[in-house]
Image (cartoon, one colour):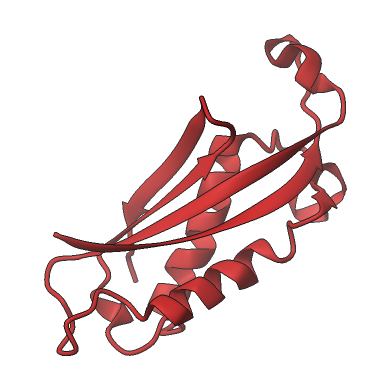
Length: 134
């Protein structure tokens, strides 16, 4: 399996509900390093997995509405615990849609799996990975 990965970051604020989260129940900030890996069985006729520039542009477009935002104030996230795992799936859904829609350039239809990993700190990270289905 071939893979290409692009990286960016976001700075957010949010809070959680429930004793499980201890002091994180209070409003706090986080800077996430975001890695998105694209997988395919064979390379394109140009010997690439995906157009790296378009993949990075799609990631920037996905992260833009979250960057420097308090996630507690985003209507789409109302009632959600915006954990690292939750955000990984949110970003995955948008990147998978970009692949399905051809926004990643010629050959993006051959991408079979995407993994989105958020590095929360130097000691913790979470990810979501799954197939890109039509």
